[in-house]
Length: 326
Image (cartoon, rainbow, N blue to C red; front, side, top):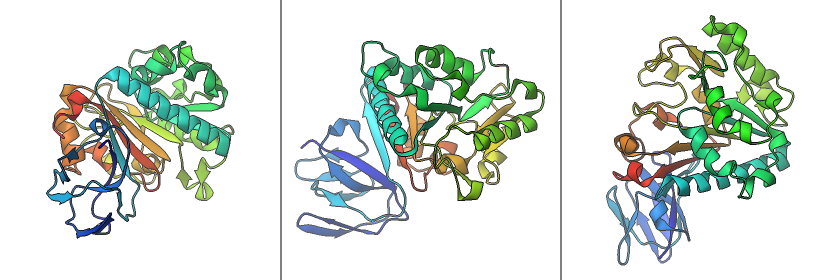
């Protein structure tokens, strides 16, 4: 039977599952089945099918018929691809769908990118002139922000802006005036740089409706795309760092990054977790241990595991080498 699973963090769920001809009490586990639908099961772990039931790796059995679990948090979806090209196609579809939805409902698509291999991965399909995306997406209504940025000049090799421009943005008709970069006049002032970037976001006139909410107390992106470092960091939120507990700022400065360069700005958890959609894109065998700790063991000491949208959706796009331990 072809199925896909959407899963949700345990702890806030109703400890009861109802399904076809069965009602089974369960124990709180790392993940619980939320819904099932027809798709390719190989893309969705940690569940594995058996002859007449599915044995959840966290210690209980349940028939594979469609079921529903009541919960109070947004669902987590794990999508596993056999290789990077397949993953790139899926993330392109995801971005295109959210772009169309956001523009239709709010007049703009507000997306934040991180660095690393992420821009190149998402660009694989989005900038391909032979596919549907380049002409079908309303690029003129995109606003591109950065989930984190190194405090370096725009043309510096460490710049996330330069990386995004060289691999993605220069190949699509996004208005350069709607690409939000750090202020190069603030390169020697990390605190001022973070404040300036936050003021750019808060004061933007092109973000459409619903970006700033609750009288300016909440910033809501349509989508935040994140990578994950081998240590489990995301954006510039590193293990054990004091910024993991920052709740009063939208954008924070960091001057002691364990990964060079030391000076950066980053979106904070309140902003990330208020997004309508958050997608991690993680590939490679060197990420498998960390993926296991985050998605299976739910190790709360890892920064990426603390990304838990309050109302939005969370999806992990990972390839088979990264998912081998799930």
